[in-house]
Amino acid sequence: MTKSSTVLDFNEVIHGRRTIKKYDPEVKISREEMSQILKEATLAPSSFNLQPWRFVVIESEEAKEKLIELAPFNSTQIFTSSAVIAVFGDLQFTDRADEIYGKAVELGYLPQEMKEKILSTVAPLFDRFSIQEKRESIMVDGGLVSMQLLLSAYAHGYATNPMAGFNKDKIAEAFGLDASRYIPIVIISIGKAAAESRPPVRLPVHDIAQWK
Image (cartoon, rainbow, N blue to C red; front, side, top):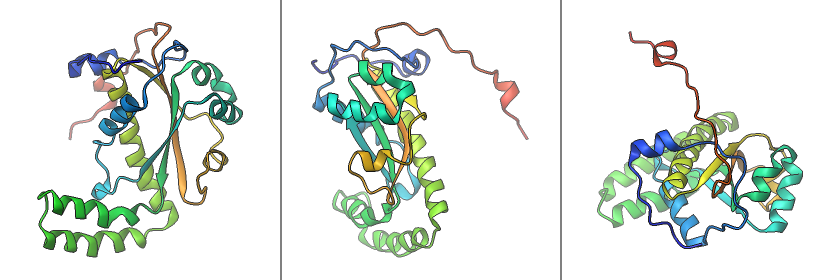
């Protein structure tokens, strides 16, 4: 599959994106294009830019067979998709703080003294968090990057389906991650849609928003 050259208007992306359960199994997404989709997804904001998200791209038949044991009710999405992206949050996300802010200094985005000030306050702050507080922070950031991934995929011409119905207690270990460190957030199937999806119905804004 060659890299898509389609560029979509933002309104076309947000109005056109659908949740798709069946894909063309003959369409494969190259590692280059998948990497680009993930790169665009990670432009999403995160708390103090610490980017706690981590991804496992499940694309081989062997890996899909392993996943289906953990998500048996999502077999169509898993088997027909080009891949399923498992999104995790890293509880040790402050470990990369020096690398992230150091790169910002190197690129001229941040003065060295500001980097030192941030690191002296942010890392100790998060290190004092309880596991539950870290999980809550990760889930917010993980939700942001996951939504951006759906939009990026659609802009590249692919359909997606975010899924929460999987064994969250076993998925990290099943794919070689430390379950005490990596928290599963969502799994997302991605591929070329093989079926249409009906337009979504959304609640009107006046029913769900308040102005004070």
